[in-house]
Every structure is written in C-alpha cells, then in structure tokens.
Image (tube, rainbow, N blue to C red; front, top):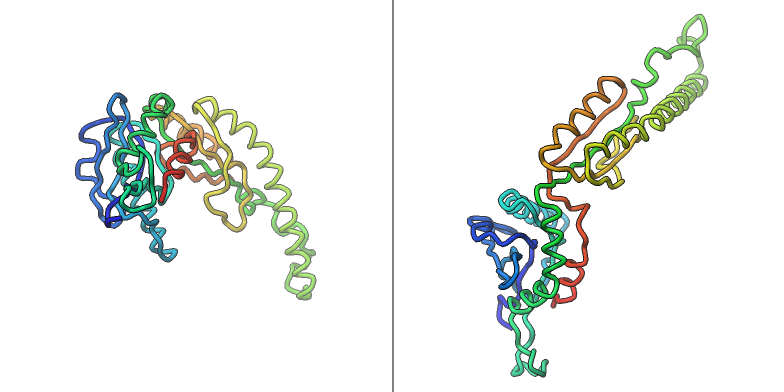
Length: 279
C-alpha cells in the first residue's frame, strides 16, 4: 500500500460545508470532511498511513489533546458531534494485484469504505446527532473538606494542661482519633448532601451519569462525581445549584468543568463498527 491509504477518523458530525475549514488535528495535520451522499452526515478525517500512531506516554497525551481540540472546534461550529476514540483508522482494501483480495469489493479505497458504513448507519447516526444538538457535557465533582467540616471541635480531647506535656505516642493516638472523627463527620455530611444535590442537578440536566473523581485531594470526602447532559442555555442553572450549595455548606468543595461535547452520553456502536475496519 502507498503511504496514505487510510483515513484517521476524528468524529461524525452534521454535514456543514465549512465545518473543517482551517482546522488542524494531530501534529498539525489539516482536516477535511468526507461527505456521505444521501445523508446529512459527514466524517472529520485526515489522510493517514494504515498504521496506528504509537509513541511514549507524553506524546500520546499530546496527540489525544490535539484530537480533542479539533473535535471541540467543529462541535462549536456545528452544535453536535459524535467523537471517535484515539487511533480509529479506516483502511483501504488491498487491490487484486496485491494478491490479498478477491471478489467485486476488492480494492475499495478508505473513503469508499467509510462512506459505505456511514450510509449503512445513517439513520442511527443522524438520530443521535439530532438528539444531542445544542447539548453539552458538564463534569461536576463535589467533596467535603474534612477539616472545615469539623471546625470548632479542635482540642476537645486535650487535657487541661494542654498537649505540651504529652508523649509522642499519645500525640499520635490523639491525631488518629481526630482524623477518625473528621472522616465520620464528613462522611455523614456527604451522605446527607448526595441525594439532595443529585436531585437538584437532575432537575436542570437532561441526563446524569455517575463517574470516577476527576482527581482526589487529601483530606476530602466524596459527595458525588458526575457527568451531566445539559442544554447550553441551562449551564448557568447548574452553576446556580452549585453556588447555592457552596453558600449553605462552607465545608463543600466544588469542581465544575466544561462545557464539552457530550462524550459520556453517546451510543458507541458507530465506534465499534469503525474499529472493525481498521487495518
């Protein structure tokens, strides 16, 4: 095969002629649309060699970030997108002269194969794009700061003469007791807040998915970690829920990220089908 006999696929999106204009992807490669006749769907791609990208952790992390930025750009332009995962390639089929193929389908180009499988799934893909139009994903991590949750209780175990005369062993024991109480207090508060906050977020979000914490911080207890599917016009409403929670509970810590394309709310069948067509 020649050098560029595959397509690296970034996303499926509504067919907008200017969606990819000036957009670059991995290693600054110019992106283009593959339009699918008879449908309202297009694929965002760059021409590629039929081999997956391989590199060290830092390099792969950079490539993933570059891919995400490209998807974000076209999402902002079109209002809806179905992203692919990293390293999704659609390869050309070997031509008969290569000795590896036979039959009438042999020798199809990568673009022909991509158009064919999008055409087969056009109804499902188009339906997803329509359902997600104008929607975005927000990530919300809520925790309780254990020190703040137990503020005011410090020193209650110290003897009247203060801790200065305590042995190192007694100091360690008291520190462990304070930590245990702090964890218990924060855990009770987190349990109380979880159901209430989840219900209030569901009142302004169209969908809700539990997920792992974005990152963990020492001394904090998880309340909830979630991805929310919301209409763009409801982003401020989510912010209001979180602001009110923080005002009522000073020990609460909130991390509010996004908006992003709705990665957590996409039916991934189209990705699996694309991966079947990899080299």
